[in-house]
Length: 528
Image 1: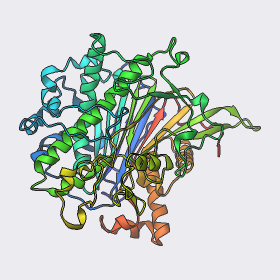
Image 2: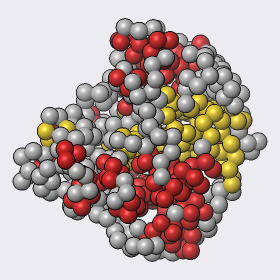
Image 3: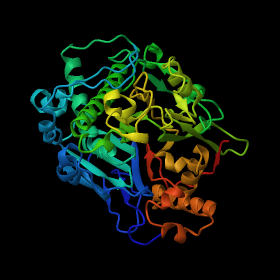
Image 4: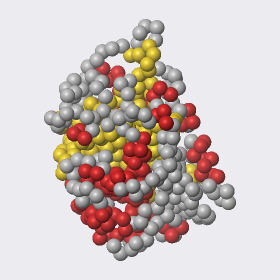
């Protein structure tokens, strides 16, 4: 797959001081070297790649065209990282402020229960630049960042890095029924997280917010995944298992906190910033959908899965809605009889689909008066995912009424049916943690967690200057072609749209962690 245009996105980044892990990407993809500064980051390099299968509009006119015309062009960089000034005034969000001034309505998008995230007023977006503290207050503080990303079909991928301050923000937005929601997320979510990181730190220093141990600011439990507490088998949860196998410890456990480099209160603030930013983005997006649905009623059905991986210092945070996945490859402390290390595949994210029995039970229990909550293996017969961004017609009756005929959901008895409550985790990175695979569900349609980890591990050992993200996509195409009875060339010659019959849009980021040198030839054995 060497012809130009096979991949919609292909980029790489290498931190300063990790020359042996160059993450070199062939075919016109430029690798940006890390800044010549003291290394504070917990990752050595990363690569990202995306391949489209769906046919979609190149850009849509959501937010009166502002997202497509003014925001995304300044952010997109599909073949390389580039330096971008980091404005302390959330300038990109200011561009959207005029779209929100006509109404101060607040759209409720989550089930009404004590565990729901708080609702944030849509007018907050337009007032951010007026009330936000200095960017130096937040954990995403930086005067300049490295940014890459782009679109592949209905998928959006985004990576933002400040090696100087030791953080990396990666977002994969797997859109469906159109790319408007994914475009909106790519244009606003990072800036919104940055805003809330400033706000939470600022409020915390001002003693404006106090929360009990183990709870975030809206009362939902946060937890840390510890490598030492995972099952010896390590390969969990698979696509058919649930996260009940994961051992978790809450922030309330004092044994986690003493003498840690980053306090539990800081972790709590980071998780809260991620959650508040997502809910803010959701409310702003659905507000804009409501303003524009007379001209574009299809917007009420547009949605996106959301997966954010944030590395800050030695902590790895995940936020997810939907069925995208983050999988950690980590060495076990023990060796086998031959002295080989065991490599574990650990899924860090929940799967929010009706195939997950926990999610299925939750959705049904939240709608006791609706016997048709799940029809033909889908929520209201429409979606397999149980949590998602956007998709307003399954959240508000008013938005459902904008659809006509068979597109409209009949008997929308007790909306919302799709939740916006994300799963949030934080993991402390150790010397045993090797790399993280971050991908949309299209990858895992063909590869399991263990196989994906094994492929990346074997590839980086034999190709220390290669691109593991692109390698995974090439392997997926080969697998999809084999299943369809085609050669890879024949499959890739099928136009986008028609090719969706054989595979989904696929986006992958591979992040090499710690000081792992990719040229190491130590014997390893994948634990199964």
